[in-house]
Structure formats: C-alpha cells, structure tokens
Image 1 (tube, rainbow, N blue to C red):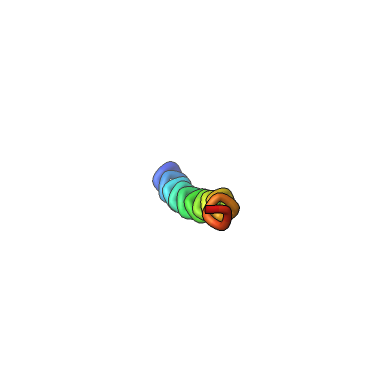
Image 2 (spheres, rainbow, N blue to C red):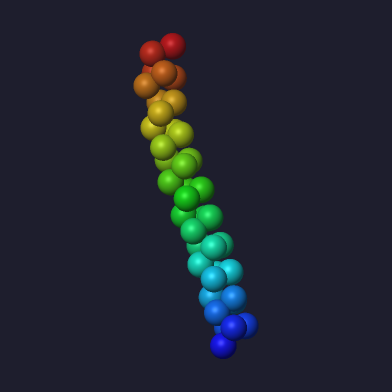
Length: 39
C-alpha cells in the first residue's frame, strides 16, 4: 500500500512539474511579448 502510494505521488509530482513548467513558459512568453513588440 505504501509503495503504491509513493509511486502514485511520484507520478503526480512529475505531472505537476511538467504542467507548471508549461504554464510558466506560456506566462513568460505572454509577459515578454508586449516588450518584444515595443522594441
């Protein structure tokens, strides 16, 4: 039970990291876009 739970949390953590990374890249691109267009 404990081993299965740790495997599940590991998969959840990887998914969360991938998701937050994607969101961060989108936010970063949207944040830099107006500045890039102005220059």
